[in-house]
Length: 311
Image (tube, rainbow, N blue to C red):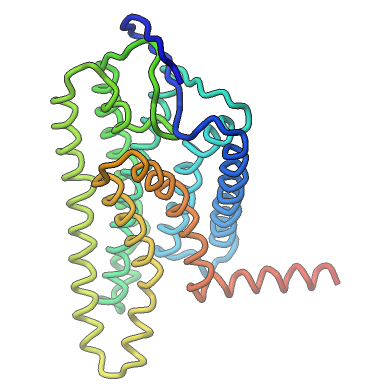
């Protein structure tokens, strides 16, 4: 542990000390995170490839899913490779610029996931409540208007929070008690006043998390009302099952996120943070591969085609 502090400087040096210095523990973490990261990469790349290659999957639902899979890859790549590097080399040093870049990307991609999940909820709402007009309402233009502004708003919000973080002062040698440069962790170790940053975070949470979550909830209230009007039990289940994969991802994302920011102890926060950046990106391909008939059909079709070609 670092015991000496240098004078306050505009270019502090950050040290990631999320876990102990035990070599055995670092090895276990390295192997575990590597396996999870490979699952995230392979699973999401598989979904992106299938959606790109299969014309049957060129629909609004899979357009959003393709964006979500791309997001999950870059979202996990902002933190997990650096964590594996630390576990492999024991080098905990992170430069000031790298720390801010990591924080900027993690905020931006986290915000974007909120917006994408909201877009997917709107898509499911239109598909269930207005099935005859689905293709007309969810045109390519509408899908683009739901996705591309989301990327822009996420980058803007992250830029604002990162610029405010740049004004914070630290001692020259700073211990970040997390496995990456997370905003909450940096706020806990600064010696500057964080009032303006806390206000900005509160405002950001309102339009990035609260409003999208309310829109998702409202969409599913309408979906449930429509499903209940279906007379046959089989029809109800078939209609609602088309939303089950999305519901699973939403519960995992918002559940982990809310529990993380409500946590009080450092150990609990560290575990939840690690789950948030590994479980959610890994869950997406698993859920959509196992529970989605179109994806499983596309996988079988590609496998059969490969076998036929080899024979």
